[in-house]
Amino acid sequence: MLKQHLQQKLLQKLSPQQIQFIKLLQVPTVALDTRIKEELEENPALEDPSLMTADEPKSEYDDLNDGPDDFEKSSEDSNLDEFNVDDYLQDDNTNDYSTNYNNGDDDDEKKETPIAIESTFFESLQEQLDLVPLSDQDFIIGKQIIGSLDDDGYLRRPLSSMIDDLAFSQNVMVEEEDVLEMLRLIQSFDPPGIGARDLKECLLIQLKRKDTNNPIIIKAMNVVENYLDEFTRKHYDKLEKSLGLDNEELKEVVNEILRLNPKPGDANQVTTKQMQIIPDFHISNNDGILILTLNSKNAPELKVSRSYQEMFEHYDKASSKDKKLKEAVQFVKQKLDSAKWFIDAIKQRQQTLLKTMNAIMLYQYEYFLTADERKMRPMILKDIADKIDMDISTVSRVANSKYVQTEFGTFLLKSFFSEAIQTENGEEVSNKEVKKILEDCIGNEDKRKPLADEKLTEILKERGYNIARRTVAKYREQMNIPVARLRKEL
Image (cartoon, rainbow, N blue to C red; front, side, top):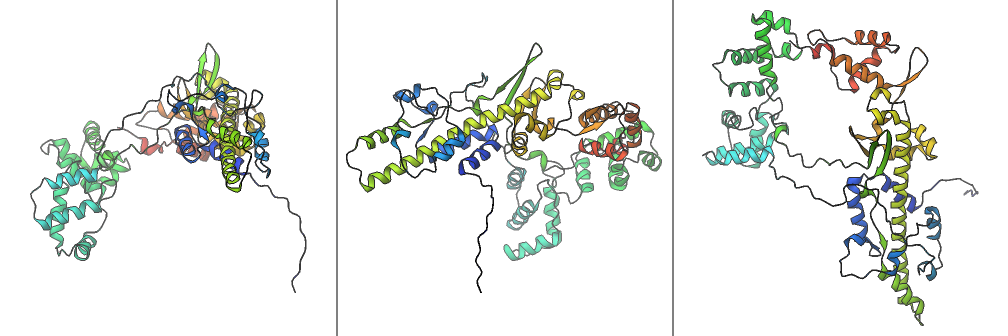
């Protein structure tokens, strides 16, 4: 038997406009221009005056400077089924939706950075293979080997698998010796070390390309061939005994090996795909007073299309309002709504970015004045969210994707947030202060006898930081500093 009952539920749902704002808030400055161009292409009711030609006449609405309506109010207005022409016919007392916004950013001119055309190491190897006089079979084998290399330049695919591939896909029957012969040829190509099957072979290929009559090179080849494990673990005392070398000789041998490239393929990789960092904010120090500005790229000058406004004027004066005309007007209304919401979201994005960054700057004022990490206060997302009366998730979206340029570098906002550590005096300090002390201690240590984590823990305790050894190890790993044994030098 079917049972029916009524149930009340309280659900929180975001409007399309709120979702649009959240997505825009997450977009970094470097990608905002692309997002705006996409919106301009999709919505003819939205215009960028900076893209208008000089001969194009200005609208009377371009001279209006009032701010946008409340963001939530515009969201509510969008739900009205009844269409009101007056909402879109502007006069001297109504708002346009322009975003005249300038923070004095120096980057007023749009400049394009030229991108150098580079070839990948796969293409470089193929070009070198083309220059070698080979039989058709050897050329096919060579192409198969090059195509089987990993991005770091190593050949990790078994020779037997490549022989099978050649037989099934190319209908070429070869022996293992044929593949080995072509592999040795490719290993003679640049960059040195390419086509190696493991680290030992990679380093030996590079050493054999050097002066093999040099006694240091000969000893280096011996270390790589027979004592690579001891070398990587920095067991230098064992190497001295096994090779009968004094400290200075071993130092020359070690330095020779350290100059080799363990990943020859990476050196030739195209890096133009990496996203360029464009700071969202600038902080300048004017005689002890910090001045915060928003990158002007975050404040595009967008307006509602004049021609779409005129469509409504024409509709308002039309005596007959047939079905087709009403459908056209509804289309225009939809595009105008969309343009209005997008401009409002851009403006709210600007205000949220400035509000959040200003709170961070005031919270970490001493740090931004001195660039001393020991002056950085412990700060979590909730601290800033409480100050600006916004949700923690909003602060998180800003902190995780935005950068600020200071006089001492460009930093991700997330880097200014840190945990609190309590000293023996009961004072709370940032864990960045502790990390800075660890970095200084390790930077000034005797590299022949580097400081172990236990010794670093003792040093911190002497300075009033009661921290466990495992916490010191965690901070050291976060700073990408290896253990004491691997920091040892001759």
